[in-house]
Image 1 (cartoon, rainbow, N blue to C red):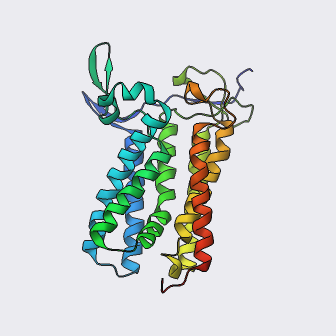
Image 2 (image 1 turned 135 degrees about the horizontal axis):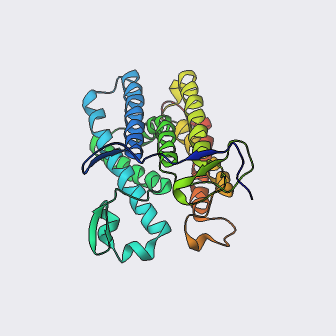
Length: 277
């Protein structure tokens, strides 16, 4: 396959600011923007529902660490267990041993499925502390989650990671930093744009069916749409780890299936739900 003449050659710096050993990476910035966007969305829902400020304040703490720890452990244990179980320090800390020396690398590997599990565990701890309804808070997070997911995938694009298979499409991207010299599907952008559309739709649903927060409709819609899209987009992605070669469906798809089912169940449940529940 020959590169398309007008293909985009993509090789940006990973850092937006770099002064000596200090740097701010695009990926970290995307995470921060995504989290802050989700924070303000959930805060607006709490305000709409007249929930006390002191009940909202701990939520960011539980969600941030739930997502970060869950996404990190998810990547290490789902995709590279043999490597990381032998190097638990690299699994827990953003460092890597290179040529006998420890180097700060950031967390090179975060899995969205692990992040989803992590945030649910964090949510359970938050509910235990605040005594709020689990399903109500889950719906609040479901409304905000797609904007966070969209920003994370845009960060993956800036990092030239999680790329697609080679393509002849005019929007193919040559991810020069990976060493691949042919245009590939910008799968990260496909996901980012899809999640942005899901976010716009779910905001519309919230405005129209605000009384359904707590029914499972919004968390179910987010789980079902995001992970259904994630399941099918995997067919045009490069294999992420060697053991996926030859698999009928890869690890990302396997992990998506229970979340799609859970999302479908929550949507079904929402139609049988009454506001007095």
